[in-house]
Image (tube, rainbow, N blue to C red):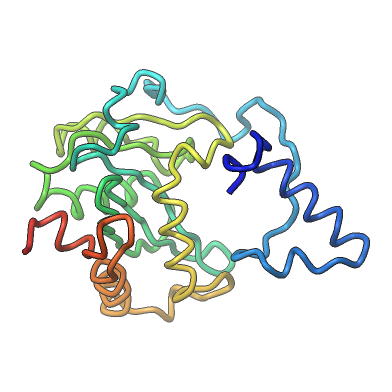
Length: 217
């Protein structure tokens, strides 16, 4: 909505909402996700460096346009007490979701999960974009197996992977924060994936991600 109100930025709107809350207002209750107020972070990346990372700014402009199928965003959702995680991959054009549980958020397990998820459809994988988490340190291993480009978003710029961030929000409706992923079986993970991939989307003309990605009439 921010772009439709005289150029007011989304952060200005959020600051107003949180200021209203401090004064006893209830605007914050209208937010879809009642997160904590944004706090400005240091611009220096503190999560460690990833060797040979390629910046999102070197990615082809066509990826930004969402005009083709094959450009993916990657992330991880963390379980209770940082025990286990779910690797999520979302295709930008269609919103198709691939997800897999890993017992720990190591680079080896995360890259292995990504390869397992994308190998069957690697002809539809042109690029992958992730954040700067160390779990994506084995990006070269993924590229070698999938034959795709691999790019890293800017630090603390989640909007550069907005498709994945929004999809993770939908997944959290099934796996809320504080959920112990050790109590979630792989069949449940697949069921969540299937539900979201078969949910009609307005931006797809009320077709589902499955229908658009696999060209199902």
